[in-house]
Length: 282
Length: 263
Image 1 (cartoon, helix red, strand yellow):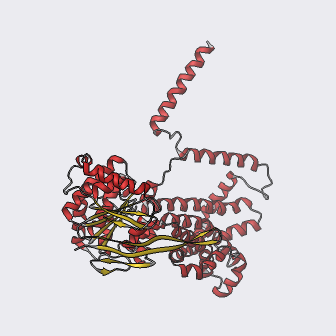
Image 2 (tube, chains in turn cyan, red; image 1 turned 60 degrees about the vertical axis):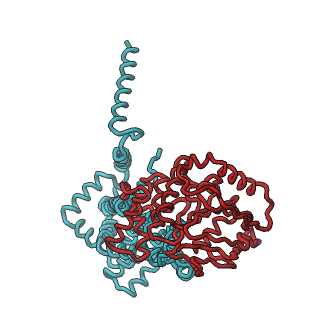
C-alpha cells in the first residue's frame, strides 16, 4: 500500500515539473519575481518574529512600520515630505547626468583632458562630502540650492568615472572605422564613442541612484531639516522608531524603483546591448 | 583612375619589453604600385608587415619614412579616395545594415534621398537588399562582411583596401565571398589591394601577388590566370593555379629573407 502511494506521488511530481517546463519555457523554472517575493516574505516574517521581542525604542518590526506608514500617509505628511525631498533630488541627479556624462566622454577621449581633469574626478569621488556641507551652506544658504548641490556632488562622480572608463574600453577598431571614413573628432565622439559607451554610462547612472538618495538625506539632516529626512530626525528624537523606519523604507523602495526604471530606459536607448550580451545565467 | 603606390615606405616603432625599449622594424623600404582596376594581394607569414603596409596605405598609420600616393598625388591620413574593409567587418553594432552603409556616405557629406538611394544600391550590389534593416548581430559573419564591403564601396573610393576580409569566415562562405568579390570587381572595375594569409585566395583573386617577409617585399608575382575567372572551382583545377600556388608556397617556406626580386 505504502509503495503504491509513493509511486503515485512520484508520477504526480513528474507531471507537475513537466507542466512548469512548458509554461516557463526551457531552463526557466520559477519566474524571477516569484523568487524575489518569496525572499521578501521570508525576510519580513523573520523580522516580524524577532522584532516583536525587542523594546520598541531600540527596534521595530514590519507590521508596526506599516501602521506608522498608514498614519503618516493618511495625515498627508508623507506625501508632502516626499515632494519636498524629491525636488532637490531630481534637480541634483539630473544635473549630475547632464554634466557627468559629457565630462566623462571628454576625459576618456582626450589625453589632455584626462591629464588635466582626471585627478579631480578621482579625488572628487572620494571627497568626504558630509564634512563639506557646512561650507556649502555658507555658499548656497540653507534652502533648495544647497540640497540640490549636495545631491549633484555625490552623484556626478560615479557617473563621470563610469563614462570615462567606458570610453577607454571602446574598441579601437570602431574608432578606426570613423577615421577611415574621415569622420571629424566630434562626430567620432558623438556617433561612435557615445553609443559604444552607453552600457557603462547606464551602469554609472544606476550606481549614482544610491549615492543620490544618501546625499538627499544628508542634505536634509545638515541644512534646513525638511522632507523625509525631517521625519527621520523628528521621530528618532521622539523615540518613535517605527515612524523613523517609514522614510527609510520608502527611500529604499524608491531606489529600487528608479533602478528598474533605468533598466527599462537602458533597454530602450541601447536595445542592441541586451541582444548582444548573453543574459543566460545559472 | 585609381592607382595607389607605396614608395620606399619604412615603419619603425618602439616596443617596451619590460623596462627596455626596443625598436622594431615593421617595414623596410617597401615599394609597390596597384594599377588602375587591378587586384593585388599582399601575402606573407604573420608579422611580416602586410597589415601594417595596408594600414599605411589607408592612412590609419603613418610611415616613418616614405610616402603613399593615389593617382600620383601624395596622401596624408585617411581620405574618401580610399575605402577600407576591416577584418571583422567592424560594423557599428547600434546601427542597421542600411545605417552602417549610410554612415560612410554621411561622412562624405551626402544627405537626403541620394543618401538612401546610394546605400540601397550598394546593399543590393552585395545581395543584402532584403536584410537592410537588420542589426549586425542579426547577420551572419558573411553577411556582416558584405555590409562592410558595401559601406566601403558606397563612398565610391578610387581604391578598395581590404584587411584579410574573409579570414574570419568559414571555408564555404569564404569561397562564395571570393566569387562575389570578383563579380563586384567585374562590375565596378575598382582597384583593390587586399591582405590575406590564404594562398588559394591570393592566387584565385589577384592579378599580382606581393610576397612579403620580415617587413620587406620579397617578390612580386603575376598570376597567369585569365579574366574573367568565372567559376573558381574550375580555376582551381587549372595548371596555372597549381603552378602559381606552388611558387608562392615555396617562396613563403624556404626563401631566405634577402634582397627583393621582381618578376
